[in-house]
Length: 295
Image 1 (cartoon, rainbow, N blue to C red):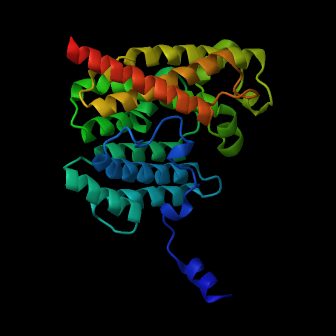
Image 2: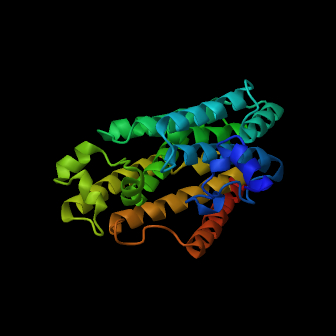
Image 3: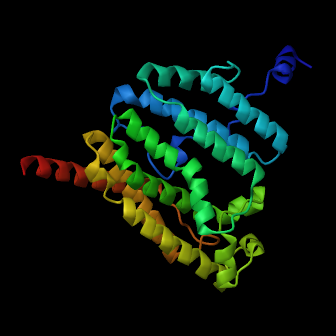
């Protein structure tokens, strides 16, 4: 064994060392894009990297549950200052402290990842929304806090973030089942449509499963409508454009999920579609802001 191999073998395991390679460019939404003011991007990127590492731990296909829990706890301790074992936690801790921001949102997300380790089925829509309370809503709340926005905007932000999360669950429903035996499609929705969890293993959705997924996509689109006015309520001009882009992408994906079978058809936006949608949404929000100021 070479010295390099020996050193690698003895190196401590961290969440960062197990990163999947997924980055902000792989998401359904922009991550600290150029629309965000440059001084704010570092803390947002540190938050994303920390959260992505925790998500990758929870979704790791071969790590035993006890190792996943230990790594998530290690991330948590590094974030709150009880350890320096996780560089990503140390970095985020420093950047949050420099801006006087709470670590609560990041810690809520760690709780969501702990739930992922121990729970692989959801009984109802309400149970799924409760999961989104930890897994999605803290992201929007964090962005609003970074920009000094009012907490009165949290309900609209929560609706948008939950819809984004459920879009992702529906897009990846077959992959999640096949790779890690995790199913976010509620059992009561499957039963009401006459579908089974096992139907997610097929190359193409059965009529019953297709009806179930379409109904969930329609319900999720209605949730997105609840938060669609969020960009207009945000005071920070650049953030309002960023959120307008997020909302536009989310509607486009929801419409794909209503129209297509996620088991056999493309329900993701291409880079060109995302770029075009971003330009249209940002320009529309900019025009609305200017028109509002003139009025």
